[in-house]
Image (cartoon, rainbow, N blue to C red; front, side, top):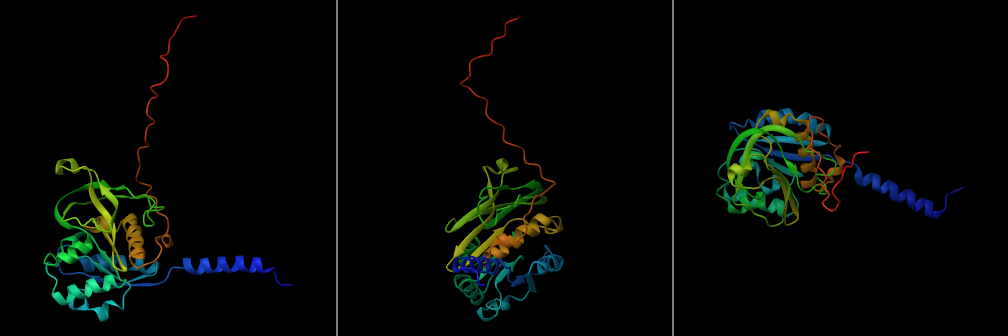
Length: 267
């Protein structure tokens, strides 16, 4: 005996939801260079954990790979390099690729790439200006954003990036760095953000100077979330992350001011 139509409809909805939540494999082109950040070594170390989550990395140092025909073979382009100039042909291909729906994931030093291209600096969302270095944790300022849901943040030693040429159009800042910014004359430094550009999405984080951050499970989890989001997937497909080494000081309740003074009398 068949179940009633209402039950069949409910079952169909559940099955469709399960299909939609199934993580699809993503192909990501990783553009690096021979600079001091060692992109190739860090990419090789990161490839296995990302591949285990269905995110497959193809590494290149060839700028000519940034042509539209090749880029369309990938769900996203990740840049982690110190490449100062972007030729006009590659600039046009990158901007078109993202506008047509491609994901763009510039990490850390990528915010100092392609300084000859104002449109690409705007695409990234800001440009690196200066840095120090220390151990710190960032503050999540958009906890309800899909990338930040069920993500605690983490602590690591990293370079304390300061950015300039901020492009706030279509930009949402997810994390800020507050530690030490008073010396820079600021209240907080934008640290991790997302942008939209046409039909495409951009995920940027200033995290990522060396293996101290790249090997951190919190960074890897954040990167997986950012890649999924930039490539049009749900970051909820990535596992929850809670940094067990991080202790957030609880907010103290303010003292009441509307109570009568306590008077003591001896028995």
